[in-house]
Image (cartoon, rainbow, N blue to C red; front, side, top):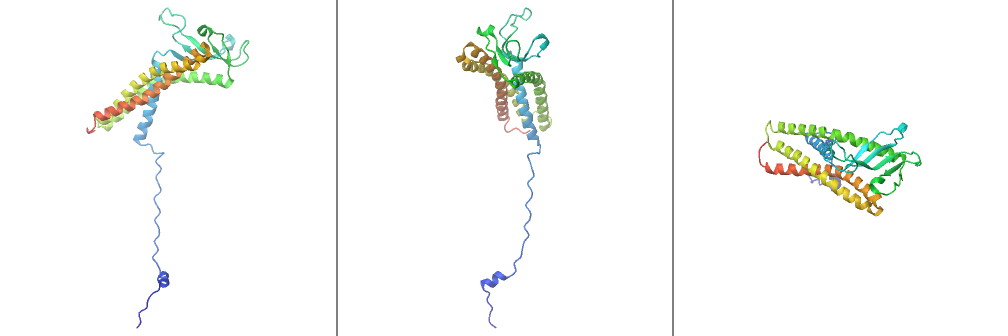
Length: 263
């Protein structure tokens, strides 16, 4: 009997076993899952910011933003003052200057029909230019001053509470002992406070110098307000930035010193 040979066409026509592809597992979303590491990083970021604000508030910085409440009945229309705490009359009890406003955010009054910024003539020896601003800017400056005052008072207890919780959690990870987790957090906390202090002080000094240089082309009416604004912003930004850098450096040093130790 002759042997039947299959042609390629016949081979292709043979039935093939079909396999049903298995559905690939759906990826588990991780962005919404709060792991201990995520919580630690979030609390660390909040603590760093709070440290910067708290330290800047505690230091005897020269320039401060003060919120005031307008009183139209008494013809007081200002809602915020950028103060020079080194200026003004000497207080008899504290033997320190009482401070004097460099810039004052003011509403329309008398011969000034628009919202404006007053620049203190007693400090610049130049006639107040009454720089016009919009009502929105006037409101925004007042809101910023009030918010900063509230944040400055709340920042210290907030930072201390968060740091205490972080240290306690690290001790638990080390089974109640001072192991590498606790040492790393202690380095982070100590470095954060040290960095925030150095950053707030240095930032305020540098900010005042930079602000004065920017405003110098406009004479005293530009240099003094520039120094005040620069010192204020520099102190807060320097405190926060110093807290971030200091905490990272402190944690790395502590981790390096305890490298190889068991928790």
